[in-house]
Amino acid sequence: MSAVRLVRSEGLAAAPYAYAAHVEAGAELIFLAGACPLADDGSTVAVGDVAGQAQRCVETMLVALDAAGATLSDVASTRVLVASSDRHDLVAAWNVVREAFGKHDVPSTLIGVAALGYEDQLVEIEAVAAVRGG
Image (cartoon, rainbow, N blue to C red; front, side):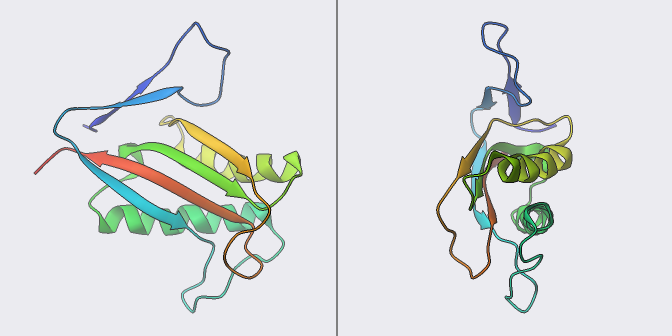
């Protein structure tokens, strides 16, 4: 059972994510570096393809979570960064992230930014997870 409980409110507009996450007392927090769309050789994958890059970011995030002893169901919040001012691009990235999380629809912020760190990078996903203390 996860240390994260998603919080919803009927007093707020319907959203495709929980508005908050409660992390139980004593849980250990895991702060992930932004998951980037990089191949094993460090090159950017899916150049020009927001959804393709978002998928690689999710895959990278899964590896980082596993290394930290966590899974997607332990994630308490995400921030999805998309190097675009076009809402269609933001939604394309969001749809990949939302599908990956499924019913564990964590509180998330979707942000259009001017640029990201790697050449040809369009997407990055930040996350905070929580696991029961050892």
